[in-house]
Image (cartoon, rainbow, N blue to C red; front, side, top):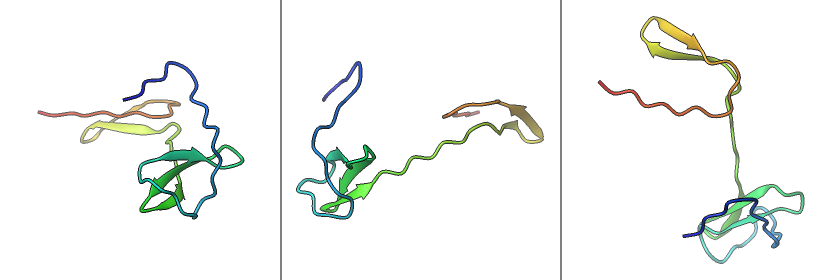
Length: 77
């Protein structure tokens, strides 16, 4: 396991959609975009964030969460 308390710098540059030797490896493109080795091919890692919006807390009720980058909630009865 590796834990980084600051910034992780990836020195090795790779090209998307080319061969990679070990699935699960992480690299970057020349512009700094992240890559992940999947099935022997470097794939672009696509991130998506919902910025703002409404969260349903109970059927018929909503709460405006305002601006946020990532919100993960679990509700169980």
